[in-house]
Length: 380
Ligand code: NAD
Ligand code: MG
Image: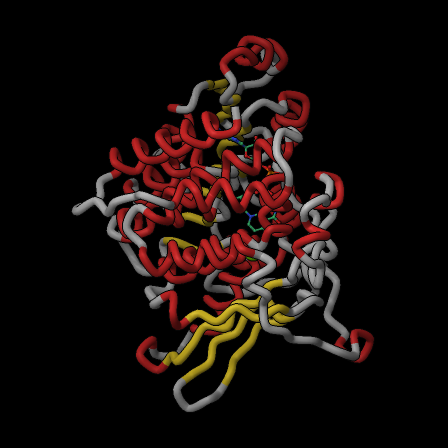
């Protein structure tokens, strides 16, 4: 089991659930970090007594330092503190639960400094998959904290990669399953945030409503498991009990099932390769009775189609897709655009892009900035 954990994004949905597990297992937290939720961060620091705490928003630094003055904690601030924490000598494991591209540099830093990395921040794998996997220093250094990818990771264990036929990536379908384009054109932010099976941060909740989340997850899976996007099949599974499956060449399908609760994939990553006792609710299939499986509706949920196209083209396209999506989702959350505008903006951003040979990290940040500016200008 990993100890001395650096937890980035501790105040979010994954962050707080990671601390539930740390509390249950009695783990030592070496560092906590959040963007701006100073009240919760202070509360977490008092409970877990880490050696380091970082508040990324520099305007809040002095306030946090003052609040924690009675404790022996080093208080840091700024985006650079993320990479510093991700590479602390004493850290055994880094858990990256930051949302969005802001998670990329700490992901890189954790891999480069040889830490075991529990990765919830799927955006870093989406935009810079190849660059990141090149940095992996040892087997199982990178452990997925996404229910589907944790499931696939488990289904792949003790089997040979060249015997995999397909990854079957399950999707709940989100709050707007079976809705028509016309109905989608007038859905509200509140409706979009209301996921049927999971309680998550705002950005991923909107991604789940557009099905972009599943598109990002397809890219994430193709990077993590080194598999052609064409060999990943998305299946709508409303109950979120089967978290994903792997089909082998002999036609066998291996699945991982559990009650939907992110604390399970978090605990699995922390305890890997062991399994330890958990108090989470147990699955009782006789109560659930039925599990359903459907084809996705790529025409109604156009973001999913765009993501799959970007996955197949690879190179800069996943980065363009992600930047446009992050900006568009922000605009939607701020009620500046309508739900279906998310899709049309991303589509526009993906047009007229050119591949870059020998893609470097700098290119990725440049493209990201350019696409974000393009979206802002288009909507202004
Ligand atoms: P959230 O919005 O609830 O929390 C985000 C965390 O990141 C917060 O602690 C916030 O302070 C921090 N943060 C935001 N911007 C930052 C910045 N610029 N620098 C440093 N920290 C910053 O999000 P979440 O739902 O916990 O999701 C986190 C990541 O995990 C996302 O990439 C998401 O796709 C992934 N994920 C989440 C779930 C889930 O159930 N919530 C499931 C699977 C994967
Ligand atoms: Mg997921």
